[in-house]
Amino acid sequence: MKDFFKVALLTVIVSIIFIGISIAVPYSQSFREISGDSGLTGIATLLILNLFCCYTIFYVIRNSTLSGIKTIICLSISLPCVYIFMTQIETLFFISAFPALTKMDVLLIMFSNSVPLVIGILIGNKIFARKEKIINYEIESKTLFSKKGLIAKIFIIGFLYAIIYFLFGYFVAWQSEDLRIFYSGSPLKDSFIEKLISNFKEDPFIYLFQIVRGILFALFISPIVFLFSNKSKTLLVSIILIYATTALCLIIPNKLFPDSVRWAHFIEMSTSMLLFAFVTWFVYNKISIKTNNG
Image (cartoon, rainbow, N blue to C red):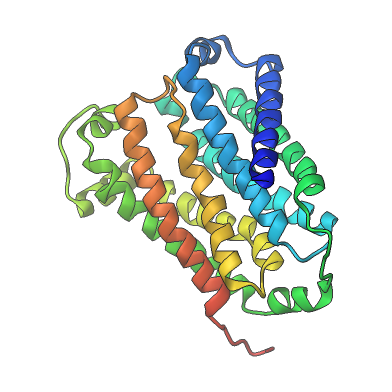
């Protein structure tokens, strides 16, 4: 119960900092107009999202056996980069679908979300860290980062992410008629192969972009893999929690998406990122890749 109140307190602090920064940063007028009237529902969903992020901070810090500074560094790389950077670079890629949003707005969103999160991690380390720490940095680092197959694993995860992305994008999100109308202007539903061909004709770079995103996911989660390289179950839960933030941010109402489109994306993201979390964990934790150099 004591830990719950600590997580709740951290949630309030992070939310207040986020609101303060969001008011201060120079968003475009068009973005201000569509994001300024979310009301009580917006505040409630923001608190839920931040509560989840703060619980993730609590879980990682409480289970870490490394020193505070190493834990802070690992978590400050993985959580903001996965939750904020990875979602917003996709927004930049599809920014033509959001006329009220400018590229500077997206960069400011990254900033206004990242700062409260990093501050939350710093505070969380003070209030959640265990008193006893098993500091064995050299042994932990050898477990993962001395392996020559690390680069191969990162590329494997990148390609698998792209496959998952397009499968769930079609068989989950694209099944929503409202979503098809929103993006294509037509309710007609092509076959999976036809959609892949259509994507290539519209912008062939999307396939390379999603592979690169998958590689970045693998890179950004690697500090958590390092942190829990000898704690398999804790690693899996941590990856699931961090990846889940990319879906949970869709619970907050916004006028960039109609609600039906937003919830279609939420279902797509929550299911695909859960699968991708298991895939990432399995490749990093269970696959051994032999190289010529050992």
